Amino acid sequence: MVQNIHIFDTTLRDGEQSPGVNLNQLEKLEIARQLERFGVNVMEAGFPASSQGDFEAVRAIARTVRNVSIAGLARATKSDIDTTWEALKVAEAPRLHLFIATSPIHMTYKLKKSPDQVVQLAVDMVRYAREKFPQVEWSAEDASRSDLDFLAQIIEKVIDAGATVINLPDTVGYATPEEYGRMFRYIKENVPNIHKAVLSAHCHNDLGMAVANSLAAVENGATQIEGTINGIGERAGNAALEELAVAMAIRQDQYPYSTSLNLKEIKRTSDLVRKLTGMAIAPNKAVVGQNAFAHESGIHQDGVLKHPQTYEIIDPAMVGIQSNELVLGKHSGRHAFKDKIEKLGFSLADDKAEEAFKQFKLLTDRKKEVTDEDLFTILTDIQTSVTDVKKYELLAYQVQSGSMNLPTATVALATPEGIRVETARTGKGPVEALYNTLEALIKEEIHLAKYQLSSVGQGRDALAEVHVKMVVNDFPVSGRGASQDVLEASARAFLNAVNRVFYSQPVKVLQPANS
Image (tube, rainbow, N blue to C red; front, side, top):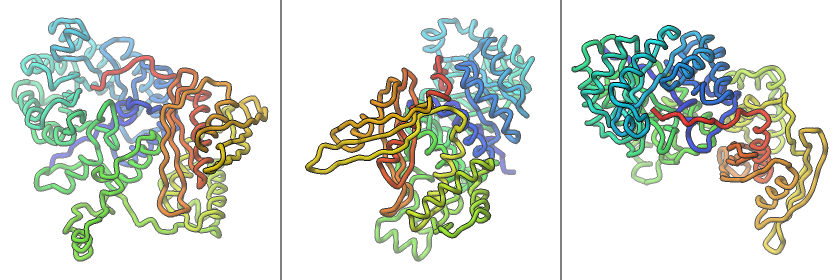
């Protein structure tokens, strides 16, 4: 009998803790809807006690997503548990993810508590949480560096107190597959009441073994895997869910397990998370990297042409990669456009659908072939845009540059107060001149930390996509913009980041552990 493995996605919590990632509520909701389509069993929507913004985002997801269990992270305090319940009580299937450290180094230096005190606190908080939550997942932070006898002792007691899921994280990505698997086997064999709880694996990728460790845990009794889309997360990230899912699907001879995931949604889910977080994917990344199905070697190309499986063990269609043909043209009407929107998995309100259609028509006037990638970019930007908040708007710009000229940019903006302002500045290059001009027009205090340029699709008429990371009025924010004009895309990314100050939640004041 094939064992079913539950998938616990923490892209919106552990993934969002990635340095420089700052998602607003609409972006989180869009990712949450896509994770639901992807078929995850549990979605960790955030850490509600960390900020009011995170609380509101978690509550919005709990109200919107109905076919997935929604979880929230909490420390071992009553106030965290109460706050998380307030955010999640509207969910169809709320779950508390409660953590406390169990390794000697964490108990001694971080918690400053004895092992007996940690056991008592864990038991008390699990018991308190079960008064509210039907599902309580208890995590032994830094489990992989904990004493196994102590781990078995505390797990037995928290299960007696009401824990329904036991998570044993490799919090700092230290364990090897053999060590991590052995820990799960030990717990299965030495905790008398372990049959009353689900065992879960949560692996970080500091030594590049997160996926291998997660599979080792499953081989030794875990029936839930925790991870993120594209493997994003603190430091080197988490186990990549798309890699785990495909590994189990391709190697059924070694991993006779099933999941609820719709593998055809992998590419779209990966692209959405990449776009909204601004975290680029390495070309050679397994499953979703742009080179994952590319063949440069003549020997490889010859083999693939004769039979794909000579060098291609994964069918690209399995993960939702389709040929990127012309999808719509300049003569396409609203009906065809609406049908395409639905096929791409978007559900837009009437006003946003109309705006998307206008953007599409403008693009067809300038671009010979409009592809799925182009539409995905347009639709994602419109779906996650905030329309009812005053903000800076780009009215006009002009940039002069050349090998014999000093790059100079002139920009006209509408301010949040509706006033037209314009000025000109110079720079060492056209982008710097443009950004110097924008900064001169905007009253917020701005520091640009990162600028990233990429293309959407291929060819000389491809859309340019720019991601920036900035600090605006002491708040770290990110922004993105797309256009066929690199400079226009750059300006839109800059303003998108600045405008987040007007509608984004404040930066988190607490740093949750990456259990």
